[in-house]
Image (cartoon, rainbow, N blue to C red):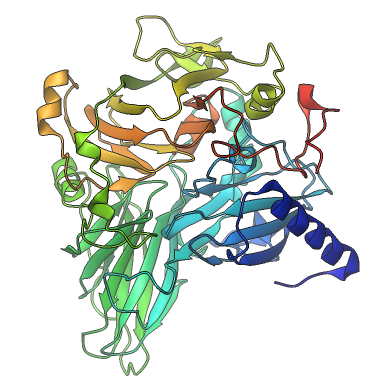
Amino acid sequence: MKLTGGYYKWQVLAVFLLVLGMGAVTAEDPYRFFDWNVTYGDIYPLGVRQQGILINGQFPGPDIYSVTNNNLIINVHNSLPEPFLLTWNGIQQRKNSFVDGVQGTTCRIPPGKNFTYILQVKDQIGSFFYFPSLAFHKAAGGFGGIRILSRPMIPVPFDDPAGDYTVLIGDWYKANHTSLKAILDRGHRLYFPDGILINGRGPNGSSFTVEQGKTYRLRISNVGLQNTLNFRIQGHKMKLVEVEGTHTMQTTYSSLDVHVGQSYSVLVTADQPARDYYIAVSTRFTSKVLTSPALLRYANSGRPVSGPVPGGPTTEIDWSLNQARTIRTNLTASGPRPNPQGSYHYGLINITRTIKLVSSAGLINGKQRYGVNSVSFVPADTPLKLADYFNIGGVFTVGSIPDGPTARKMYLDTSVMGVDYRAFVEVVFENHEDIVQSWHLNGYAFWVVGMNGGQWTPARRNEYNLRDAISRCTTQVYPKSWTAIYIALDNVGMWNMRTEYWARQYLGEQFYLRVYTPSKSLRDEYPIPKNALFCGRARGKSTRPV
């Protein structure tokens, strides 16, 4: 990190002392400091000039390297002409939803101002990413990879790779994000994307160099806006080893479906003759198939890439569903702690509540909207977490979204569902539409215990995997299908539950889960950060005394 000026050094020191004062971390947990300037800049990923969001002049943004329990001090300078926020996909913000970086938890960073995120990657390992959460900024960039390595004393179930690559894939539009937002604001749907980017570059724009005989880790994240993408490497197999913080059974695949918002780690061995090979990424479940190639380049290669770009699956849902069922937790491997991942027997815990979530699309006041259980989310004028913390009335109502679908027509509301701290809930996503949905919950990892076609009934519990289901933070729901997850509600706060289909999220397909306890103990939730921003009806409030 580059520190810019004595003032900033004192600012970081002040934040450091405040963090120690809040009791959120222990003295042995190291700190990593980042100083980011967010600007607009010209980018040309698909060959035409666009207005991109750059972080320290980079598109995509810089990777965050960390180790379990590290404290990340990320000072974000907003040099855009409008408010800005970053959110941290998969980082659980244990006991600290104040810094989650979405509109329901954190005040927006005003133009020309800065805000220092104080995050701890408590008891986490794995591959994640960050991205802008406001407006339609995600369509302009501002995203980057996050990797959390295991502590040195914790065994990892595979040898150290020769290299470790971040691979950010996603569908992309040639239009500026402001034009896309304007289409949505007028009440229309977006058209089909124009292409696919791999690490911010279009077809044949990215390459990854390997040495023959060595094994490499690829951390693949779908940072796109709506489409499932299939990832494959010509002539090479991929061994899956980690999914969003969980070490997996080490199954080998020739191609892998990565749904929007998801992250996978694979090992690839350079065991083929020395030449260049295609990496191919293509859309799934679309009538028009977009494909973007990149190169896997052997360091001693004497031959260029040859042959056609390898084809992949296109519209086959059963193929993807069957692959998803093979992704399971490695029960004997350690996670962020020395004890095996299988030590927590989620399948033996009694369910305290069942929540069924059904997405929908329709018109409200003549404009396209999307919703959950008939409620289309509209943001409040004050972050919900601040309103809750300061007991500001009239901002939201707990229970403004029902536990299940209703026959009511879709309507607008600031939807918040209340759940009890330490409850163990079953959530069933039902998808009655013809598209693949992708659902994410901030602040948590959950067990994906089942998925299948048709409608869910209680009898479907007989199909659940109650032994080694994958634990992750983003799951797919196939067309005309259901997916069931279990969540241990052990993280107090206000947490965003949303579709990762970003236009639908923007137009209302999201809500907030208020995980509540009447206790005010630091054991359950940290106080509001001393450097918190205040806005809306919380303007003029003050943080706690040091």
